[in-house]
Amino acid sequence: MGATGRSAARRPAPRALWLLGLLALLLSACGEQAPPEQRLRATVQQMHETIQQRDPSALEDLLAKDFVGTNGLDRLGARRMAMALFLRYRNVGVKLGPLKVQMKPGHATVNFTAALTGAAGTIPDAAQIYDVQTGWREEDGQWRLTSVRWTPVL
Image (cartoon, rainbow, N blue to C red; front, side, top):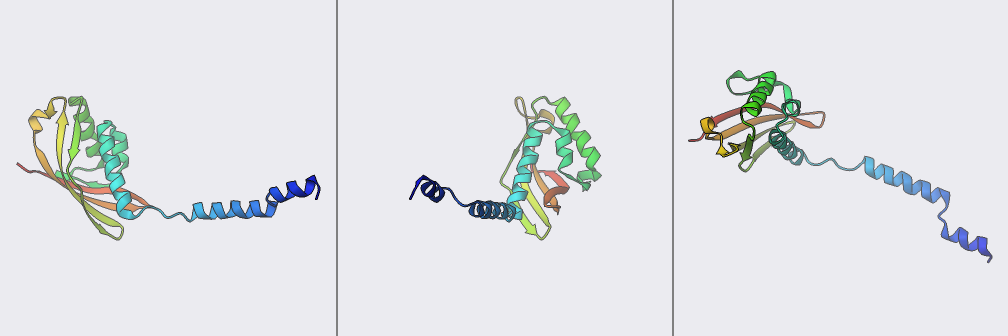
């Protein structure tokens, strides 16, 4: 066998390369999306990080078009409230308690406790822990916050 016979044996045939490439493409296209609850928990984490980064626009993007909050707060009102808090309190943040998730097809509720924090701990005129109930809807594979209600715990 000459040199050409050895090099041909080492190189995969073009057909084999094509099949491997096609297989890789199919596997990546058929890759499973994360389960709904896992994606929902990731969205709640994203919302938490958005608040920590003081980004009212990104926060609004996570809200459903028909969002309703405590006392009739709507989507635009939620953005304005976030902007006001971010302006008034330079180091505003939120500490969340454990998430209690209840899943239904396309919908979910997530309940948790939350404490607003500032530069010196909690925000003085809102030094309170809140019980928070949220409603979520899945839209095109993305979870959007449809409702939120918070009540003081103490």
